[in-house]
Length: 595
Image 1 (cartoon, rainbow, N blue to C red):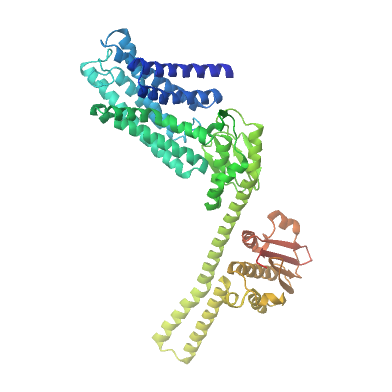
Image 2: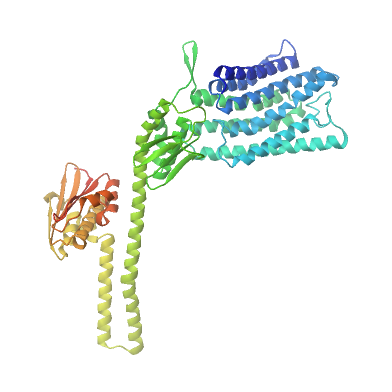
């Protein structure tokens, strides 16, 4: 592996070649002293090799810096070639040949800036595997464009070769070369438009920190492509100032937005700080956990639990500069940010799941990386718990829907079908009073069953009389001795519907369990409200249960109470189960409520 000294020497050499071509070509084209506009153009062009050197020298493993150096080298050498062609009035000889070869590198510069620089932004990696075919298409098109321009006839690129192309082909061969060059340029431009669309799509699903950087890159791509499109009519309009603006826009748009992303938004952990009259460049600047969560806060508040996991995974990937990051839940659900490829390099537990990271885009994970990931594990663990709770609530709602559907189908629906059949029979046979009396009793029974079914969904007494009255009404119809004790103030106190409903159905489920599974002969219900907590306790004298078996499944998951335990948790409360074999069972549920 080459040393940092040799890597920096290589980056410096590439930057020097680019700078020499930009400055030398600019001054050779206009002569010395150069006009002020030419110095502005040279300064704008120098931004790209400076950024390429900065990234390549500090992060040699990130190919993005080398990509910028390659593009700026093609730009500088292309500018030098153009200046040589302008100065050589004959259009022949070795100087003209060198100028033509160097000038043709402008096509490579355009291809790199249109396609690869925005596509690989900011870490030098493809956004997905699907772009591999697009990369080969773009590389082939750029090569065709370069070859076509290099040997094109004089008439086709008269502005590029003002004194003729010394190595241009003529006749049918020249026509084919021109067609290949034009086709390559067109395909390259279409791929560039596809890259722009890809950036917009990435913008929509990215986290806030990355969204700001992508927004800048989209502006740069629009400026580069738009400036190039305007160059055609401006070249023939004679409007020199407009042509100069179009050239500067085409060349400098991308370097400007990349510089803004690096220095304003701390891209690649580089920050510029001005203190008084001094300029400081700070490298290896890492965001803190508080900074990451502050940026994510608004997005997490608006997102669903699973979407929260996706944004947290993306924050881990961006914050640690990993190729991919995964948040995995205990049930096997995996939320991936980036393109998962290969084994995880770093894994940290997070609540009921874990976080796994692929390799870094450059280098290895450091102690600081592990510390940052460990700190992020806390909010990610809470998000995992929230996602699991939401999934269980959805499952519980679906199970309740199926139960209601089954009860309607097996009960009320069948009774109504029988009632209709009886009415049809009575009409056909002229049924007497006995048949009508029987049909009336069937109708009353059906009405009673529908009322009981509706009470199971949401009893009317709960809406009208409140929690205590609804619990007492529920217990009054039980076949065993049941007592309901409640604070006197609770009988006239009302609470929000979701709180009363949650406690009522928890009490109902606990009573049902005591009757079905515990063989209880006595049940006691206690309702209290103190210290901002509304609480219900259901105790029975049944056969109890094995705490070890229940503990393996989790608190509240015995006898169908699991969904209600999740409901309590979602309301900020809880549910626990106590007891043992031969000791009866005690179910305690509580939710926070105003005092």
